[in-house]
Image 1 (tube, rainbow, N blue to C red):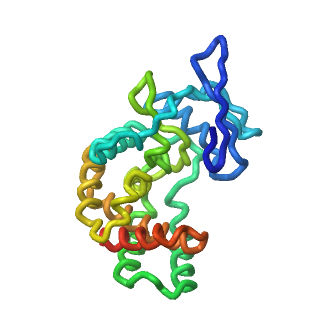
Image 2 (cartoon, helix red, strand yellow):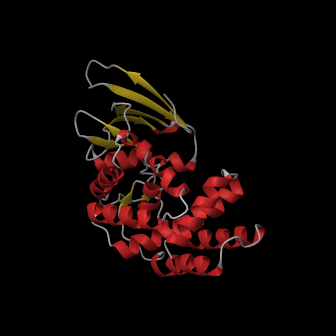
Length: 254
C-alpha cells in the first residue's frame, strides 16, 4: 500500500501483533511522525513498535484498510473526527515544530501569492484571514496537533473503533485542525455546491462540540486556513474546482 509520500508493507513478527513497516520519502514534514506516535502511545492512534529515523522507517501496529470515508452519514463521521481530535490533543513533547513560528511566513506568502495572481479574493476575505493570523497566531498552546486528520487518515481497528495514522505533527491550537476535517474527500460534494455555508457551519458545530473546541475560534482558523490553501493551490497547480471551492469556503466563513 502507499500514499503520496510513503510505502506501507504488512509484516508478521512472532513477538508482536500484526504490524506494518512504513517507509517515508525523506522530507522535513516527516521528521517528527514517530514522536507523535510516542506521545500518543496508542491512545487514538496506531502503536509505534520500533523506529529507524535515519531511514524514515517505522514498525507500526496494523489497522484495517477501511477508512472513515466508509461511514456514510457525514454528521456521524465528523463527530468521530472531533472526538478523535480531542483524544489526540495531548501535551506536546519538546522539539517539535510550532505553528506559531509560521505566522510571519504565512503572512508573507499569502500576500505575495495574492499579488502574483491579481488579488483573486475580495479584501474582506483577506482582511479576516490576516486578522486571525495576527490575533490568534503568535500565542498558541503547547498541544500536539495531528496536522492532517482527514477521513483517509483514520482507519478502522479491532483494538479501538478508529485510529489515526500519518500525522504531520505540529504544536499549536487544535482548532487549526478543522480545515483538514472540512476538506476531507467525503465532503467534496458539499464544497462543490453553490451554497455551502449552511452545511459547513452545521458540520463545524458538530465537530467543535465533539472536539470540545471554541466554535468561534475554530471558525476563524478554518477561514484563515481556506485562504492559505487557496493561495497554496494557485502556486502549486491544484485543480481549478478545488481552488474555487476553497475560495468559496473562505468567503462562507467570514
